[in-house]
Image (cartoon, rainbow, N blue to C red):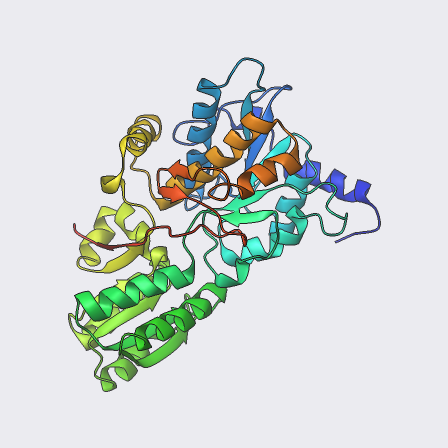
Length: 380
């Protein structure tokens, strides 16, 4: 990236943003259009991507709610999104940071992307003069803790998720010899370390822990290795996209042993054909509509009405992140440093935020403290 002058970066940033007018009417419910007086909550996820669209929709519902309750004299809120899926995470972060109308960012959606973008949001190169707060709804890796005073997350960490999965496997299912197959990336490697430690602490043994590469792994060979270990449960640290061929191969060899996956498996319930194939599979979830209070039930109802679908974890966490940013800006105005300080005080000097995914309070390292993790079973 050219770092010789801020003007060159700012010009690139303008190219990285999509005008809201061009997005009006897009997607299942359309996006509201901001105007010249608006302040913006950006979302580091492309509406063009089916897997990421829920993040954008969650932010949009939050912005709509903020605008309905906007006091007299407070500027209206709008939504900014990246121009397209091809832009790099650094380019997206730079564009949002260099847009003075953006007062906070929801994102990025994964750990690696958030780690890559963190120094941009903190404006490390510029001494923090143009820094902007970001709250990630999907960056679960422990390495993100304390990475920047400008970066927070409202999702549980891999350690929280691993501890819940280990407790469920050992204590609820009574299984103590597991095989662990994990995606060979930042998420998968971090999860397998956290799960192995938590499971050992409960007297369990990880007989096999094998990495895989999405799309090119021969799962039949993995199944034979796992069968030789006489495992009594299978843990999957990976996503729904590769789970189909994986489970077909593994079940053909291992039989009907319990399968417990990470939160990346949640999207299998959005496809009725896949739910039949994955019947009985359990996975960690960071949000369950059936546990919702009154405010959360209102969120579910509005999401259904607006987008014609059930809200998932991505939509709910993005909604909560956008609400926190918007409430901060409503209280202290569009001053980025004041917004960041307001966010940092949630649960520490300021009451916890009553989010639709549970109460949110931030630690001094930007983590969401004591967020719930559920174990959900796929039922057709």
